[in-house]
Image (cartoon, rainbow, N blue to C red):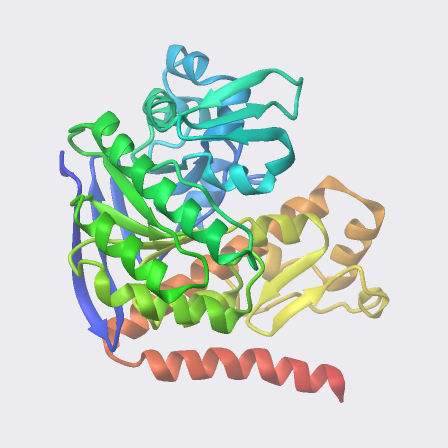
Length: 377
């Protein structure tokens, strides 16, 4: 294993690429989907299950871990890797998403974001420097700059103001991060749905010579076509020898579309959240197991899947667990969903390496569409 952070592209197919991020705690195969472990756990999953499905990295949440159990406490207890029993890479977001999602509980100025805790009402200042400090105390391998994320649609003036503030914060985060061998800090391209602002943000961040670049502020209310247009605007401006991360995305189709446009990394709560609410992702599309039509369906979710949750249990049993509110139902459906997402990423990597990405995407879509036609028949 290396003691440095590095990224190599092994193969390309159009704009899509497959490669590896190498870090002291392991190798991240790209394109990669990072299961979200907001509070130091991927909900309803054991860490060894997550790894066995093919995940090389998980995501932790700076804001939530700052509040509970507290960054200093995590550090005293040996760091997030030790607490989670996850010895592999961890990426932490910076708290920027909560600037948007908890807008009613925060005040923002040049210094940073002052949050009123949703847990007990206590006040916490999250400055760019404090965000990086917290991520360091957690032991994060890939740390994100603090940014201001704006929900779309929004006035151009608000989008521009947030983009420029995020750039100023990126510089402060870069200084606070300093030189940490084997670790990385990524900048976040902002600019909403306005191409000129996205271009300005990307060019300024590239000038900071960071180890990786994320595209933020998407999948926050805009149509998929707008998201893809912003990726196409930004991607040519980002260094080809550094990883590109599309934050908070998304559906299987979002991921396939973004990979074909040159994105390397993804995270989203969708597969875990959906699993806890009776929704599953499969090669045959998305199914709502709360639906009464599954009450006597004795077939498994996918007999060809290697995941026991998909190939062993009947839809009727899973339907029963979901309707009864049983914890096992949440566990099994989350297991299935993360398995499907990791299988999708493995398929994308293999297809790019073989130069048959378009065929793979076509076959994948045909599976989704055939199931829709069969259900409508």
